Image (cartoon, rainbow, N blue to C red):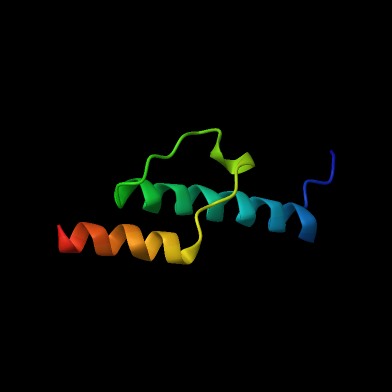
Length: 59
């Protein structure tokens, strides 16, 4: 039987993938256009997210 224990690097990659997925989901809920191919593209800056949210509040 093969050893199925995960390495620390496997765990880090898993958590990074889940974190990106959750971030994309939260952006989608806030009204940003998000596609599945975006993990290769840079994510919006924190200020860009604030500006988008403030524009929605002021409208």
